[in-house]
Length: 77
Image (cartoon, rainbow, N blue to C red; front, side):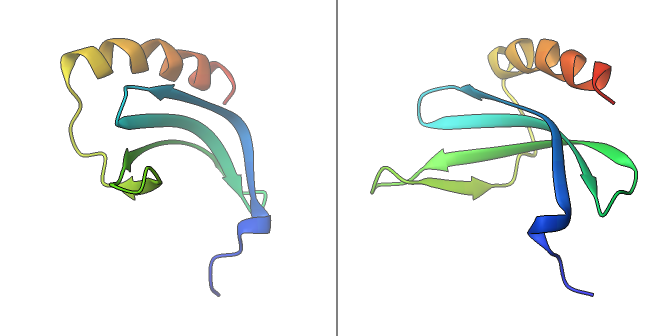
């Protein structure tokens, strides 16, 4: 069964902007299943459009800003 975006429900979502990159912390439930925490990164390309990128690693500054948001997200789970 392919992914159906209409079945993906966001229970919490907050984005932190770091200039040319931004990180989103979200709590989602797909098809009324288990509630899960998701972290995603987007980078701005040359056309000033946001493009999905692998999160992988965060700088110390990013981590310091994202951890409190993650704590808020966990409270929503």
